[in-house]
Length: 291
Image (cartoon, rainbow, N blue to C red; front, top):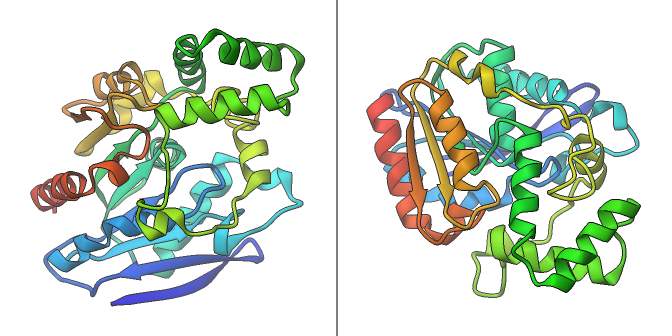
């Protein structure tokens, strides 16, 4: 069973998608997608979790997909997106939830738990995410250093000039993303191939021009020294070839008391899309343990 709808937020409309029925003995899972500016689409690979009696709530954050807004650069802050999450929970009466944030969505989960002192969150799953924009930037440039000389020089030149539009730079970034993010092709699940309305403005003003240049409102995001304030069961997930390098994942794992870290061998940034069955099994086991 799939239910779709919208709720009002800041004078705009936020789209949500609910999979599965409501069950008394299981806590629903709320999913926070990446970007900023991506969409919920790729989370549809997790729909089988609903077959086990688990309601899934996913949504397109303001600025992208079915919640597209542009021409308002002042909106693209962690505070805006955290308020939207709070409103989603209020509108859908989500008093108790498990919370999963992937990539930027994990940053949002960290912000929400620490800054908003969120109540009713049974557990959090932090998937291929980061506690610090500066740590992320440093690790991306370490990964870039392993690219062929011509590709890394094209990126270094773009960084010096501030112009990332050259064909050489685009080619280098494409290779880097295939190595560490994903390589979606015709054999990928339909929801990952589906055309979507990406929130370019939300990404640019929220994060920056690319994965390794945080220049937007999140450029100073750093909760490394405050991760200990997260006092709920926490599962960290990452891949060995992920943009979220093992160092980044371990920083989160080390910072959150009594957390658990699952490292997927050979996986990139979209672990859920490369090892979907194992990912779903892990989530199912984790949530049952912490319902």
